[in-house]
Length: 480
Image (tube, rainbow, N blue to C red; front, side):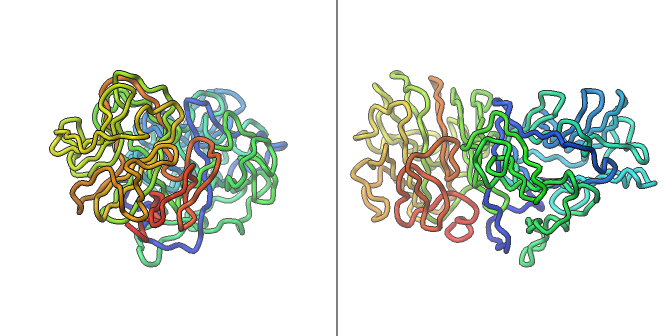
C-alpha cells in the first residue's frame, strides 16, 4: 500500500483541530524520551497512538517500547524494510507480527499509527491490531504468532518505557513524532484519535483526544514545552492530567518543531536525487553533509512566493563552490547532467562566484556580480526568495540581497527561468564536503531574532519579504 494513499498531507484540506508541535528525533544523537511508571497497571489491554514523519528511512526505528531486560520486552518499530512490527518477548520466547504486506518509507509525509492490544481475546488475531491512517492493516506472523491469551505485556509494567528507541537496545527513531498517546486499560479503534476529512473522505486527519480516558499509566504528549526537565515544562510533558512526564535524553529546545501532521513543512528528500550515498541527512532531513550529489525538497509549487534560509555550518573550501538554489521537478531522479530550469547559487573564496542557470544539464552563468554573496563564511545565513509565478529568484546573505534586490517589489532578482513548472529547493554539488542546516520554517538550530510570514508560520532569522511564505502545506493550500 503506497504511503501517500490515505495520509493527511495538510494541503487542500481544512481541519477543525490543529496540532501545533512535534518532536524531532535524530538517531545519531541517541535521542529519546523515557519514564518508569511507579507501579504496574493494565498489562493486558492498552492502545498506542502517534503521528510520525520519518527522517532516515533505512535501519530499524524504535517508536515506543518497554522492557525489564533484553529477554522481557515490548516494542513498536518501523524496521529497515518499511514494515511496522509489534515485538513481544517473555523469558526469551519472542512473538512478532508485522505489516509485511504494507511498506511505510515515505519521508515527505506524516502518517498515523494505532496499535491496540487486548490479550484477553480468545481469537489470537484480535489480540494485536495495527491501524495506519484509519485503516486496519493485515498482519503477517513472523515468529511464534500472536501473544498467548491473557499474556502480560511489559508496557504498563513498572519497568523502563521509551519513546524514540528500544529500551534494551540501540534502535533509535529518526524523524518526527506528534500526538503521542498511551491509553491504559482500553483497546481503542482509530476513530478515537482521528477522522476522515468531510470534503476529502480518503484523507485521514487528527482530532482532539484530550477528552479520552487515559488510565493510570496513560499519557498524552503534545510537545508544547521546550524545557529539558522531567516535568510539566519539559519536552516530554504529559498533558493528560496524569502527570506521567517523560525525561528527555539528548534532546534540546531546538528539537521542538512546528512541522506537524496538520502542517507539513518541506525538508530535503533523501530518496530524490543522485549520488545519495554521498549525502548524509540528519535532524529530520534539515541537516545535510554534502559531498558529491544532487537532492531536492519534499514539496513543490508551480505558483506562489516562497522563502527559506540555509545556514553554512562548515568553513567554505577555497577550491570548491557551495551550490544550492531552486529546480523544477521534471527530472526523476535529478542528476548532475539532467538538471533543467534550475537556478543555483555558486560561491566560494576563489572560484565560480556566480548564479548559474541549468538547461538540460548545461550550466550557463547568469550573473558573476555576486556582491555580498562573495566570501561566504561559516555560520552565514543564505536567504532565498522564489516567485514561482514568474520563476524569479532572489538570493541574500545575512540580511542583504544581491543586486540590491527587493523581492517584495519584484526588483533586483539574480536570475529567472521558465515559469509554469513545479519547483522545489535543490542542492547540487561535486567536490569538497560541506555541511548545511536548512530552515524552511522549522529550523534545527537556534534563531536569535524570530520572524514569521504573514500567516504566522515559520521561524526565520531574517524578515520574510512581504507576499512570500514559508514552504508548508497550509501555505501551499492557500497560495500554491
